[in-house]
Image: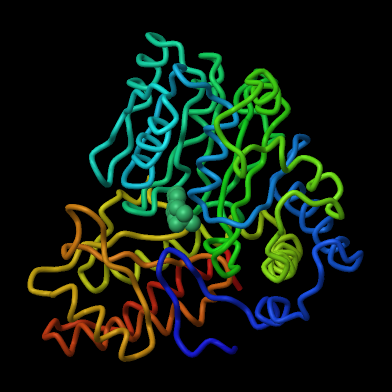
Length: 390
Ligand SMILES: *Cc1c(COP(=O)(O)O)cnc(C)c1O
């Protein structure tokens, strides 16, 4: 492994040597047939990962650009969306949509909790929403959304279901051909993500898939107030990557293509199970240290956890102690800053990395005067990992 440090923040995530190698390929022209073949393959693999019969777009940018593409290509000025927010990233859809003159209603949960599905149903019944945004896992709180419940409600209300998968895609189920409930039309309309989270590529790609229904919504809008973010400008390139609209990030696409091969070789079912095990294992181990996630285990995300500090542990000291040992974790956002830390456990992260992190966290806690038993924590970690990861 080329990495010298363990990057256990909720993105970017550890990059494998194979992916670095792909990134360091000789840069070719974006219309060179050899690159075009790779780009085509990356697009096909994206479709396969998301099981979409619609279209995918892979462009230079970050997850936020993909969020913007989802909104601006489906909702017109003056139309209304509903934002279901479980934290900081859910909230981001509000100013984003308002910037385009879109009306926004928001259902916000308390941080660490989920929005009540009953409330979603009630609000959907009162308004006419063009689209509803759901953050599959909110990276500020470690809360996962319940798509099984939400998608049928959203679709029954006639809205487009937009799923922000930035910390979920390639780790949690986002199967766009899956029917939720009994109605064959109750499917996810848009999945959007970035390269640097559960896919495990360095930051720099915005990735988004549109269902046929979402594409129809784009067609009905006609001219939109966007240019780079207008999927109509990218359609030709995605159909035939030897054509030009704006220069694609050639090397990142080499890396992305390699990462997707790793994803598909592992298989989405295996990956989903592995991430469930990772989430449970990390939280079980940290509980042995007296550290608890802000989200109840029943709604906790498989890809990252937001963990409250025990009394007396200072955020800056804790994270600096870990950084000295080569383990990088993240602080928390907004009102949780200083009170909790966030640890990513996704993508190319291995059980060995998680064990190393748990041991080092134990050492740092000891150093900070908290009595802990690392062996017990590692045993708890391994017990959960053993369920699905050999
Ligand atoms: C990271 C993240 C984003 C923002 O992605 P950027 O790549 O930082 O623009 C949006 N939504 C979620 C859920 C995220 O985790």
